[in-house]
Length: 326
Ligand SMILES: [Zn+2]
Ligand SMILES: [Zn+2]
Image 1 (cartoon, helix red, strand yellow):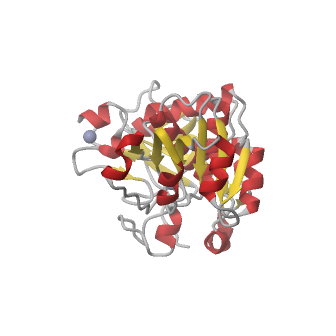
Image 2 (image 1 turned 120 degrees about the vertical axis):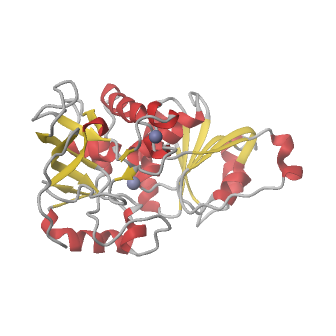
């Protein structure tokens, strides 16, 4: 825990009064010192912030932000000029002056945070601040992966891993009309997966995954897979059927295949990195329209005073999802 001065908004910036700041699985890479990308001890953590506009800097018009607006934040910004920034993907900015909350600039685990006004997205009235926080990374990442996979209505879709992202993936895929088979190694997570829409569940620590999938699909295997665990890439390819599509989200991930053994399966394999600004907003609207229980993804709520305890809890069991509420 460290003290920092409250930020002031510069040109084009806003200060957001934090209302909810989620704890994301990727925080643990920093907490444990195992991150392969940036981040430092003097950077405020939290890249799932949600709150209300507290102050606006010079040049921020009412169209962009006004004090009191309920806002989500897309947790990256870039040059605003390259093709990726312009298409809503500032995390893919071609220039090297991009920022990511909690890595290159202060994040949301603090009462106030300063960001460029262009990172703000409206938080629909029907959504809680903590739902907006989840959509800012973990839940939005699941949405982004599902969108990459294309049409999944009616498909048999396997979600590998039922952590924060996987559980959200189960929820979205089910709402979009897929038959969802949830895979994990913990029964408690699989019980939650059923609550969030999984038709069937497989505990891959207890039964043979390939056999269980063959039983559930008449030997055809999965039509679509969302891999969120970061450790089940090889398992995913074992159960992916002909014409299968798979999206690999979980890190670190290890996926390999020999073309000569697999090419007749006509697979489409892809990766996905969080979501665009536009898809973050669409994700929020979808959650509202389908009344999805995003709030229930959070199992623990903490005040910032208990941040040390909160991260010890998160580090020890890496299960459930915590949020700081202000
Ligand atoms: Zn750019
Ligand atoms: Zn995250």
